[in-house]
Image 1 (cartoon, rainbow, N blue to C red):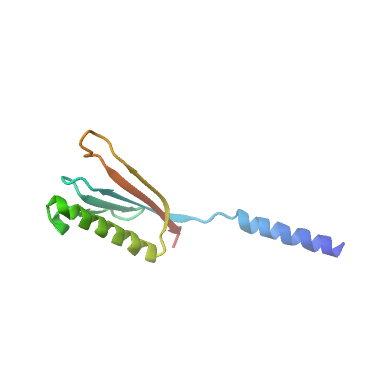
Image 2: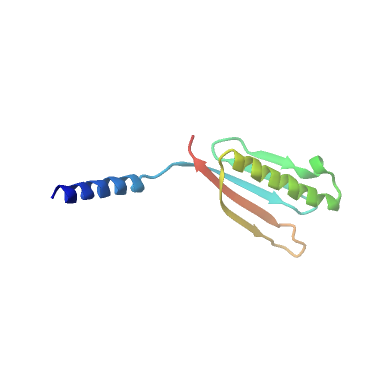
Length: 112
């Protein structure tokens, strides 16, 4: 009977531990690669929005878009090394000339 009680106790404790919710911080990173826009926006909820004009940082030529992409993925890796976990990625395009193309990353990490 003691074994049954011990097993039930362990099971109840484990269910309670599993059921606890973890509070997270969230961050959205969006990138617009169109040659006339070329910006990276980083929103860490609760903090000030960071807007990076990649046309100014990497040059205005169309060939600089590949450099922009390297810059964006370097930022993704930077945040991953800080403990942010990629939850979702999506990209979409609207308009005949793709001026509304946007790449969006959603990250989270346990609240600090």
